[in-house]
Length: 188
Image 1 (cartoon, rainbow, N blue to C red):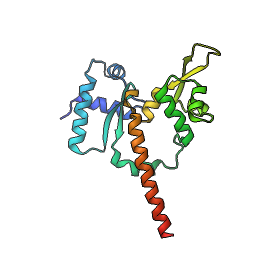
Image 2 (cartoon, rainbow, N blue to C red):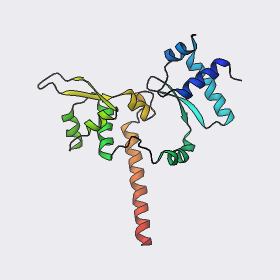
Image 3 (cartoon, one colour):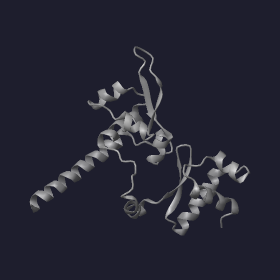
Image 4 (cartoon, rainbow, N blue to C red):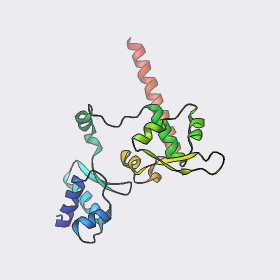
């Protein structure tokens, strides 16, 4: 059975637009709490009872999330809304920044081979200017924001997949695409 404090934390997370920090929760309930343990208790309860939600640590706080298996219905609910959509090129630029930050525009362009999508990523608050590089011209340095972590459901940059893992995923995806394409060729 969950205590009143557990229920208050759930209500705060449910109503919050942004992830909540321990400090925000303590200010709201006016007492010091072990938020990490409360989150573990709530998640255990949700898991045991088969709830479609759970609490995830993202960026520098916690937020209420739906479980992956409910994604198809949620996607249909929001498919016509103006969610942040990123082109393949913008995602490539964002990945370079996430793994190489802080990084300059010219370094991003050199890796990608074409112009980066920094303006779009800045407007979507996925990256920010982190400072200036020492040296000629003192170019701006870019890095990811807490919103980037929230958007991709990451607790920190350490949670990014390793480049080796990404390559393995991409190899499997390419093989699947080849199979689908050959299936289409044989049915046409």
